[in-house]
Image: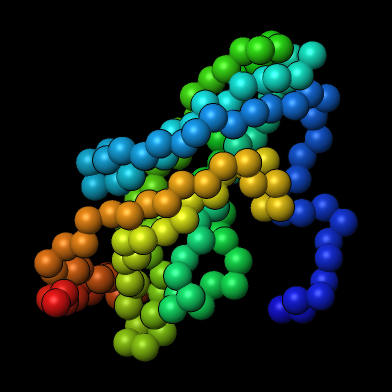
Length: 151
């Protein structure tokens, strides 16, 4: 990847005739998944839609130089000053990265969730600090499950 490259339009860029404001995001358990919720308000003067996007920023050990898109939700038509709640459901696999040696998926328990209009227009962030289990199950691409004791 060329760190000096600047694109004309960032990933996820869209056009609208109004502006949107993002409230403070929250997270809650949704069974085995984590749900991140944020209120989106049309604070412009005309009706419009937007596509809210959630990116996860992994720790350096994962080897991802940029946050990864993990979810997006298109809102319905919002009149001026109207709000809607947007929910992103993150599975354990969404919160994992592939470790080429020993060829397993590793779950991450401390992540940054970034929410916005595009990869370069982040409006809110949320630190996800999930409880660390005493044992960790990882899955190989062939479906084999490995259990590791976490100390």
